[in-house]
Amino acid sequence: MGSLALMNNSLFPNKNIKVFNNMKQLLFLFGAIILFCTSCSTHRTLVESNKEVSFTEGKNYFHIGKETKPTIMKIASQPEFEKQFGMATFMGKGGEATPIDFNKSFVIAYILPESNRRTELRPLSLTKKRKKHLVMKYFMKEGVTQSFTTQPFFIMIVDKAFWDYKVTEE
Image 1: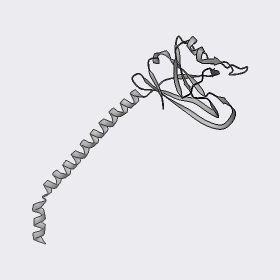
Image 2 (image 1 turned 45 degrees about the vertical axis):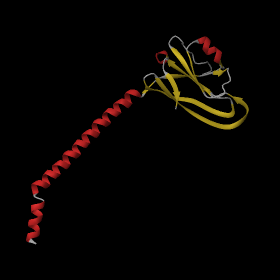
Image 3 (image 1 turned 90 degrees about the vertical axis):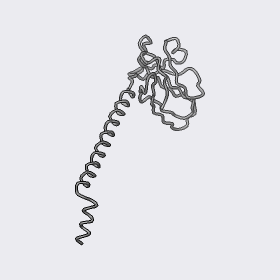
Image 4 (image 1 turned 120 degrees about the vertical axis):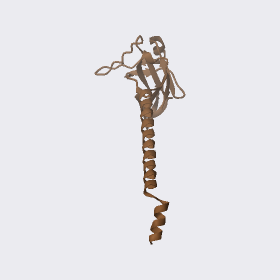
């Protein structure tokens, strides 16, 4: 037994084991620092590039045209808007159409094809994803079949500073 213990001590002296443990600790610490640094910079990039853009939903309008496929439309003027939409006002609280000041704002309209199904469609968010690119998210729910058709759409009134941005859906 004594010779076996001597052999083990000569193969693995205590100082080599300490060096090995110190190297493992340094390697682990170095990996943790790298991971921490990369996760911080990635987070900063995502936060800076995913900025919510405020909008107002336009209410009490109807669409005049007949779109045959889902369409995103950007409208910058009152005459252009009136070619696509009319006011659907009614008496009572909340019956007036949402006012749009085309000097300060523009409209993003999302229009679906006509459908005989009851369709609930509303905007959820508008996000600046990267330079000159906006992504809109929306909620859509199709319901029961109706005896008539409607053309589901929503209108987002957005600050004119974002006019040059490309708009896509998610």
